[in-house]
Image (cartoon, rainbow, N blue to C red; front, side, top):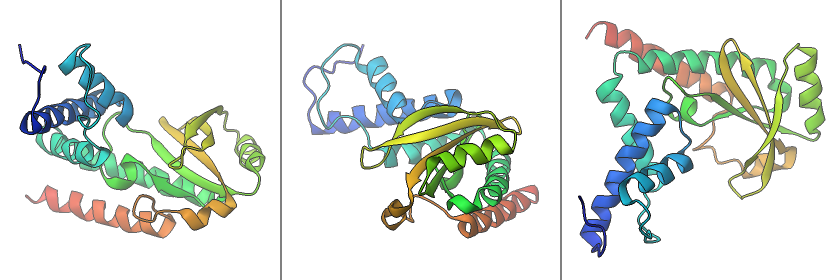
Amino acid sequence: MTNFNFPDNDRIDQIRNEIALLAAKLIAEEGCEYGTAKRRAAKQLLGNQKMHGNILPDNQQIEQEVREYHALFYADSQPQRLHALRSLAVDLMQKLNHFNPYLIGAAMNGTAGEHSDIYLHLYTDNSKDVAIYLLNLGIDFEVSEHQGKRHEPLETLSFMYRNEGVHLLIHDYDDLKHTDRSERADFNAVIALLETSKQNNNNSEYD
């Protein structure tokens, strides 16, 4: 059994890497969110031992491990899955254009797998307008809250669309000025991503 009692810096790096690897597997195989995957991985590796504050990997490290996990175990299916989710996101973003949609998460950054859902940020002066719009489309949804990047509660509307889970996180319109373009993609950017994934899929057919 591995001894974690007195980890030095090198051992901390090793433990952090092990947590990242296991968290990536949980994300790819079970669809866990990053925070949940990190906690479960740490619990599995460390048991009830007290964790050092800097022992958990950041999301960027885990994201890279997810990419490598997909490349190793799902190279024949993950690109098609990613393309399908991005295609569906484009369809939804066209329908929700009035609410300034941005794609975020795994479908945006390219790590989407079998269990991934579609996450969109919407920006509007009145969140009720989104709910009314969905109802007019005949879409039943559930309301919950997600925590925003600045730890603010965001009303979230979740539903199934063409057999895929969709989550709309509602922002105030003024929050558009705080949008980090590196972590979110507007409609035109998703179209570009879709073209890239289409080309990658076509190229893989000839490998």
